[in-house]
Length: 577
Image (cartoon, rainbow, N blue to C red; front, side, top):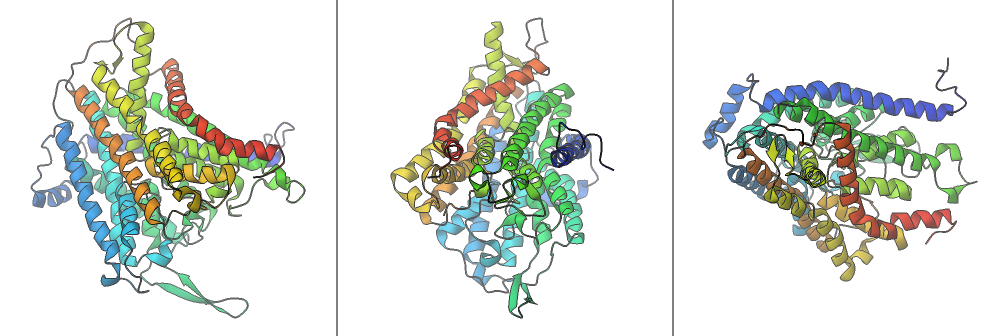
């Protein structure tokens, strides 16, 4: 029997079902993320010790004392050194792939520019892929190279968030924790257990997990077809949970071996967002004021809901140029899987660009101009709508610093956050860090245009071609990894510059936010007074969102007007470029 909501004259039955699906998905996400956030707070506070022996076994050979505190600069150096070593190891694995085991299809080593781009991509948690995984990489490269980096790059981001929370919660100390301890705890207590559960669920649903290179099938016409196989489920689990996004197959989670059913689609969608959302609740507990975490959750959540609604509305409306050729009730199904439809694709597109994941279950190059605009803009905002695991929270805290500074100017007193005075050092670091996205996106894209490398890489002329270029450099600088796949990035120029954009976007954010955390950790806490601007109420949430949109969105408005906005206007006018 149809529900009262679905049969309402005000809401068409199909739209009602889609809205119910969106609401149920979001409710399930919060129901899982909230207790996970409490659990992670206990992990990073050292309250849980059931893996203590494993921690010591991993840290002792390296001479690390788990409880030894580090100054923010030492913490940052440890993180940079670890990631640099990871880059070197992964680069060598990719270059020497033909000499290493578990290469049943005999793939050659990657050329230098592609190995550089791929190694940087996975070390920075971007997982941008200028190659087809099933036709380029061996099982060894996929497992030992990429999947390993999926774990440790995600754990590095989680460690940074934990260190920043400690810095904000501490009083007059010079340390923010121990990077090596945070790294190991993130893997042992969070990423590894969750990945095992998700991987087993995916195997149960039909995702392959084997060392066999391929299977041979006979088609209905009697021809032989070779179907690529491999250790897929284990990589998909951590690519989603760690907001990595790099697929085993070229078409990522649109491939039926990565994402075969609606149930697997729900599991993988939840995995994209669950840790970033949980970090809001972790943060509130670690700083000793749960209201602060809830305020960030509400701000991020409102922007995510708006993004889902905007993408869904754009894709559901379809392309007016195709009126009379396709059923308008189906919406824009170009580049989408029938088993997911418009609503499943819109949910995923919003989540993967909000959470800096980058995996796709539909082709973003086939989104409507407004749908693609929303996805691109979420990346350009700088990982503030939940963002990548850990680093999304820290990206939002940069805007918090800027917001309380503006609020302080409004009330005519020194801005404060969590009882700490926000002074010139913190504001300058935050403001300089927020310039990274414009430099990586606008600067590097302009360089590609000026040298002619952009024109030879785009698939389409006119505004959509500009959108392809902008999306590529937004995705790289924002450490997202998704793409308008018509953009031909597999060239020495783009592999190199996209790699540099990824490095800038990852470590150009992490180091300054650690410096801010270290600076605030050394300050004393002052009690709240009548003039203190509260940072946990609706007014602050509204001001925070406004600051993000004004500072972040308006930075890119002129170039977006030449790309997706111009394309949408041309479609409404009834012609294409």
